[in-house]
Image 1: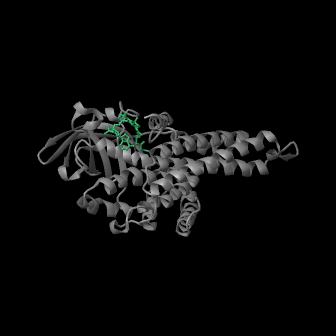
Image 2 (image 1 turned 90 degrees about the vertical axis):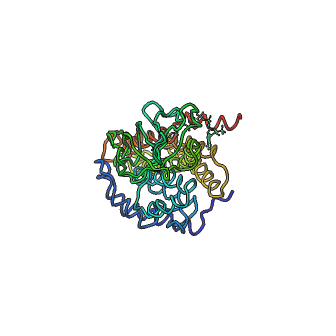
Image 3 (image 1 turned 120 degrees about the vertical axis):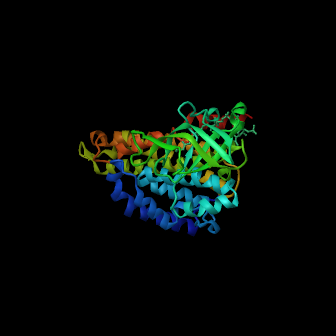
Amino acid sequence: MDFQFTEEQQMMRKLVKDFAKAEIEPFIPNLEADEFPTEIVKKMGELGLMGITVPEEYGGAGMDFVSYISAIHELSKVHATVGVILSVHTSVGTNPILYFGTEEQKERYLKRMAAGELLGAFCLTEPASGSDAGSLKTRAVKKDGGYVLNGSKVFITNGGEADVYIVFAATDPSKGSYGISAFIVDGDTPGLVIGKNEDKMGMHGSRTVQLTFEDMFVPESNLLGEENAGFKIAMANLDVGRIGIAAQALGIAEAALEAATDYAKERVQFGKPIAANQGIGFKIADMATATEASRLLVYRAAQLRAEGKSCAQEASMAKLFASQTAMDNAIEAVQVFGGYGYTKDYPVERYFRDAKVTQIYEGTSEIQRIVISKNLTK
Ligand code: CAA
């Protein structure tokens, strides 16, 4: 497999890198104060980043999946929150409509989502249904040309800020995961109640909210795909979503590696830079090796996806390994910085807090192991 970026992919990477430096870096204190980056999202829309892989006929940039993944990678290297906003908007907000929507739904939503005018969110997880996504309890009952939804969701990224929610609800609870349907829900739908925004360890500035549906009416024209075929829509889009989260983890891992390496070269103790001690040098060697392995896994999964090949197992492997690397690198980076690493004066404590969730959302590391082992042993 050829891992060289094409000229077009390189241009996209550079554009995102420059954008992150110019627009996100100065905004980091605001993000850490939990301010949602509304202006940054708007500018990403103007640059075409909110619809990178959406075909041009639907208002997107029509670029390949590797370019999209490299955008999340570069954004997350500067601040992981911006990476997750784009990843959720694209992989599990926009793509379900692109791949499963009717032409009418695409006309109504895709163009504006690709332009960044409408932000997407994905509503699968519930208070009692996290890893066991097929056991969700939100109910959709057919009535008067549509469905009435009742239930609640938790940990909804982009919730409250989003304009379009992809909502999963049971249309036939007797069938378990084979009785779930997907719906496109407008953010201003009566009965959609935005609840608490979680006070999180990291990923500050991103929104993670509870949602309640109180007799929320969704017209039949907003049913996404076939009735009772929603679980497969969720799973198929999570396959792809997981590559995005793996790319986010890769960005954090690289940022932690670079910060630790630079500091180890500058920090002098016992008359020499601490990098000259094998105890530190070996840490950096291990961090760099795991980062390189993550990079290969992430871009291999992305390339498979770009070629339209199945990639569920590779996506899970990439997410499993890159998220572990992000966490390990962040822990070691704090150690290299010593006492300074434990303060908010340096970014490594942020990498430490932000890395953790990459092992949890869009399927925990344990779920990735289930997907990989099921695939190998079926
Ligand atoms: N693509 C298409 N179909 C799939 C699929 C996939 N990747 N995975 C499963 N399916 C299908 C199966 O083929 C099966 O259908 P058939 O019988 O017709 O073949 C059906 O779905 C049921 O499959 P399983 O019996 O394997 O399902 P399960 O109930 O055992 O669950 C699981 C499998 C992998 C554990 C799944 O529940 C899962 O992924 N759980 C984790 C949930 C998750 O990732 N949540 C993330 C929330 S979103 C988020 O975090 C976003 C954010 O805000 C950042």
